[in-house]
Image (cartoon, rainbow, N blue to C red; front, side):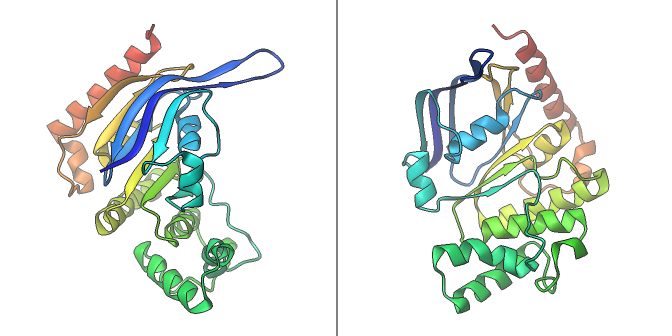
Length: 257
């Protein structure tokens, strides 16, 4: 039931000023159906690790598998969808047209594309907005549309690189609730990069705390919170105690040797 397996993964970027060690000896197992958040200071390798899982970067050491395959083989097998920090919607295409684009590239029929677009728009609560253009939607709605695009080909794994970081707190709370609901409905494995402790604690079944560069895992915290989580769970002693564990892990990372 393992979705993602990293063993002693390291990644070094060569630069004109010398090598940049982005990741060092990262080992992690993510089981199917987990919601795993990666948190750490800027530049700690969170996004680099997510991109390595997605075959957008190539590790220079260790092994990495996705659904038992290499990341590149998993990409070709359409094992995951990827949501970037910005929605990345084409302004000349409607929302439905943006969602349709990867399906067109994959060769789905017009009827199948229409069926999938209808389904994912409903999943992200954008029914009725398929004919709108991106500029006609709010930032939060655009990000939901980008999530719908990643869901359209029904991959088992959803990788999300700080998708709500640029949104205000009210919209972010609403999308956090919507993402949890989506996760419960689909049962997908989710890897989620964030800088927000409350967001990581609210969303996750497991929280991976990373150190400053070179990025290493300092702590993996299993959440005791129930999977049904109203927003007001953030005021409970259990939530506050879990957030404190994450803070301690972040402090450990700054003195990690």
